[in-house]
Image (cartoon, rainbow, N blue to C red; front, side, top):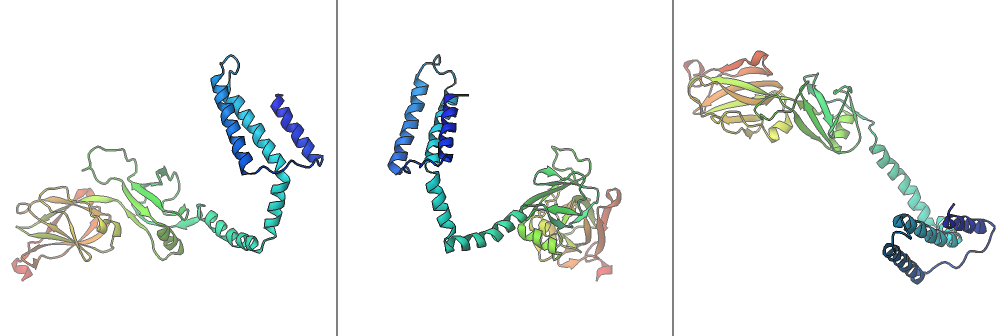
Length: 299
């Protein structure tokens, strides 16, 4: 047992015997105590290592002894101040108000808010805040009342350098309001993968129009661009996606759309072709053939 530790024990024993504590140090004394610590630190670092092999350990013991001395001598004063504070009406009101607030904040950090997102396909993997969700059912997810980053990816997905490979992982942002709405059942998160959708308009067309049956709000805010340079970036017009078509006649080119049901048709000179109902993903990457707009059967 070191001399410093024995001194601390003796100081505590004297305090417990009821020995009156020394006067409480004022600000000036505290400044001098800090200066004392600084001087001792410099002295320890300047002395040869043969005298003090472990300078950091000796300095920490000195600071501990000095700080404990100040605390023990001021213990009675601190106790009286604290007891006086508990008798204050303002202090009591603050405690009564702070407790339920802090309790609610604590509860919001727990993963007790069950949400049931709309996910397809069912066997996809989920990553919540960069941590794998493990064996937890993706459609029965428990999260905290915080903002979360949700990534859904195909089963057995491996990182790819080629960005043209679809379907690929998709990341969503789940806000605190989204968590509350999903928990209350007023809004169901919709997390779907995106697939290549090949379309083949008949003849020369100006545009290809895509109308989703169910709106994927995340996708509509930032649609994925088509794979081909012959198709313009999709423009969102109301609840439609409009693609400028620059391909050759009867060209077969891919769009990129989330899993779901759509109505797709081509347009030329404000003349619309016949609408075709499409369900994504296709079976074996089938191609959707679109009727030529302004053809006699559309007149």
